[in-house]
Structure formats: structure tokens, C-alpha cells
Amino acid sequence: MTDRRRIVAGNWKMHGSLGAARELAGALAATAHEPGRGLPEVIVFPPFPHLDAVRRVLEDAESAGTLAVQLGAQDVSSQGEGAHTGDVSAGMLADCGCSHVLVGHSERRTAFRESDELVATKFQRAADQGLIPILCVGETLREREAERTGEIVLRQLAAVMELCGAGGFTRAVLAYEPVWAIGTGHTATPEQAQEVHALLRGEIARTDAKISAGLRILYGGSVNGANAAALFAQPDIDGGLVGGASLDAKEFLRIITAV
Ligand code: PGA
Image (cartoon, rainbow, N blue to C red):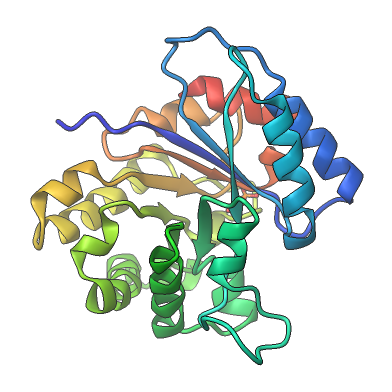
């Protein structure tokens, strides 16, 4: 089995003030850890206006023996540049020090009616600028109850595969986030999540076994310090995309150490 380095990603969504973002970043980046303990990659996703301030805090704190924290954005424009009021391009995010970007989060797919094709274009834009896209897929409760989970997540994945091929996942990350588990306190059981993760990995393996074996697939949806270890123990769960619990430095660190 390929040794995949785990990832714990904190999606701060539209929460908090600039001061709170600085404080949270500072608390994470100042955390001492014992080298060689096999910590996961840690990435935080602050709101756009807080990116630069958080980047500074992370850079200032970066020194031997403290947790390395990478920076990501919660969304990206599907356009390169130009007259797109309100949009933020992948190039701008890279300039701001972002290494990662979320694409296709269910809150964007639902509230902003982002189609699978639009999400795929965003994924490609991000990758073209050297960012690592984290593609989020997941079914609603109604879709799960209708036993359509596999169909939905494979359709969402297919749009990106069509545009970028399996090669698009050489660096990219996948995140399975059942919509019914996001912010609800209802977590998928480790077995439910594992089943979907294995399905997604298998789908990519049909095109490229090597890329599939190295691909990190995160679980998201009400992950917390108490349930993280059981989820991360599953063979195809390579870490977590954490919303609510990432806003509390202590709780987020509990998840990081659960890996
Ligand atoms: P949650 O959010 O952990 O608060 O459920 C996860 C996400 O939306 O990425």
C-alpha cells in the first residue's frame, strides 16, 4: 500500500473577525510538536479578506519545532482575469501565499448553484496556477435515502475527470463530504464513509492505478476530536476537512493528533 501522508484541513467558512483569525492562526502555528511524530499536513482556509494577515502570522511563527500550517482559500474564480466583479482568481490566491483551494464545496454547489462543469473549470484554473485543488463531493440526505450516493459522487467526480483526466489528481486532493453531515452533528459512520472513499478511489484506479493509490481522500462532515480517530482508522480515509471544530484551536489540535 502506498504511504499517503494524512491531511487535516480547517475550513473557517464565513466566521470571525480579522483579529480572531490572527489569534486562531497564531495558536495553531505556535503549537510545539515533537519532530518525527508523523504529524499530518495541516491547512487552514480563512475567508478571503483574512488570507494575507493569516499568511503573515503563519510565516512569522514558522520555526523549528512548531507546527507547519499551510494556507488555502475557500473558493476560486473559474475565470483567469478581467471584468468579473467579486471574483478572486487562482493567480491572486497563489500571489497571496495560498497553496490549496477548495472547489465544489456543497455550500457553493447549493447556495450559488455551481454546476459540476463550473466546479471542474475552477479545479483546472487552480491547478494551472500551481494551486492544489481540494475537490469536494457529496450527496444530500434525500439522495442517500434514495440510494443514489454512488451515482451522485461519481457524477461530480466525472466532470473533473472529463476535463483534467486522472492526471488532474496527481497533486489534487478529494474530499467526501455528505451534505447531511455538514454542520449538523451527524457524522457518517466510519464504515459509511469508507464505502464511498473506496468507491471514489476505485473509480480513479480504473484509469490510473498509481494516481489512485497515491490520492489523498479526506472525509468531512461534523468531524471532531472525539470521532476523528475512528474515521481516520479506515484504510481509504486519509484525513479530514473540518468546519466547525477547526474554529477552536484546542479541538482542531485534538483532531490533528488523532491522526
Ligand atoms: P463541519 O463542516 O465540520 O462543520 O460539518 C465541514 C465542511 O463544511 O467542510
